[in-house]
Length: 247
Image (cartoon, rainbow, N blue to C red; front, side, top):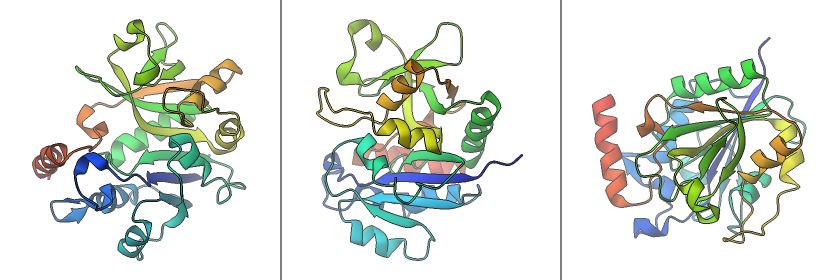
């Protein structure tokens, strides 16, 4: 039985470290805005609805993507990834299926990797499935805390919240997830902002689901380059070269 799919792409951030006023997702990769690169890859999968969460330079992003068929929703205040996803709740309130959450500044994701994520999510009958990778230097990334010797997660701990023991973990959260849509928005309402950043973390939904008896799984990306986020011009240039090599 085929399960309906929706997508929420987070693209509201300013990207201060890019040292440019241009919205991060509009920075070009080999001549094309990175958000278009990602959406073109997603177009190979069938989504009932794709919602783009916009903020900084949102009107410019809307203009750039006016022919793309995506729907837009605003995140006027930057209050974290959980808050960003919550902005799409009204648009997806009646949707019954699997919702992909992805980051607009992680454009090297392939359709094959995402299809595998969807398949593993469906086969495992999980409420949520996270795409992860092993990084030699995982600084800055949330860490995956697995249930020992399984492909299930009990929590994702953000770097700033992590104990020295958890900081030893090399497996990171890519920010790419599949969720049972109804469960996602049910538990998102329970997320609090009592953390080091004062933000609503999407990753807190994972612990809430686990603590309430729901199954949460993890799938490791075969190519860790696919989950690298872009936070600087140097990283953008590195990724451009990887795209040229892949082509």
